[in-house]
Image 1 (cartoon, rainbow, N blue to C red):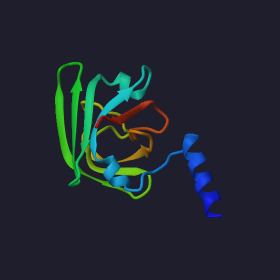
Image 2 (image 1 turned 30 degrees about the vertical axis):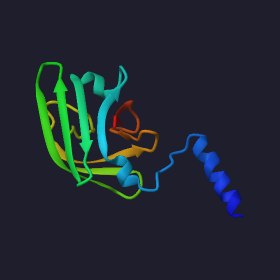
Image 3 (image 1 turned 90 degrees about the horizontal axis):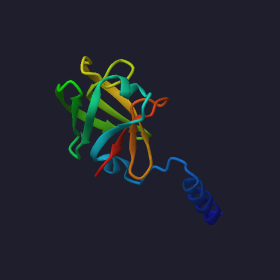
Amino acid sequence: MLRVVVTVSAVACLNGCSCRPSDARAALVGQYRLSWRNGSNCSGRGIEDSTLELRRDGYSEQRDHFKDGSQFLTAGSWRYDGKDGVLLDNLRVTTTLEIDKNASATPAGLIVKWSKPPNILLNRDDDCLFVQTQ
């Protein structure tokens, strides 16, 4: 019976399900770069580059660079919600979770897509996400 459960789980993971690592919080620690496609909410906000760092000690840092030359550094803290989410106490986003130079830093809950490397989605319905770089 145990062999069947393990086999079914392994096949499900290979077929593209979201497989959470055994130490999910540790897997989230690292540097992320914003990635988007044309037509996404990110493409219309003048963003040139954005990075998000999640440190082991719970500290977070967001660095945004916009096409007009403006830059922002937003520091805060983060925690893993124990399921498939990252909770940040200070993220520079609009109320619709878009990165915008006129946005204020605010608490935000983002969805983790457990891939290798993990991705952090700004919006489930948009191709605008942070992809882990290290």
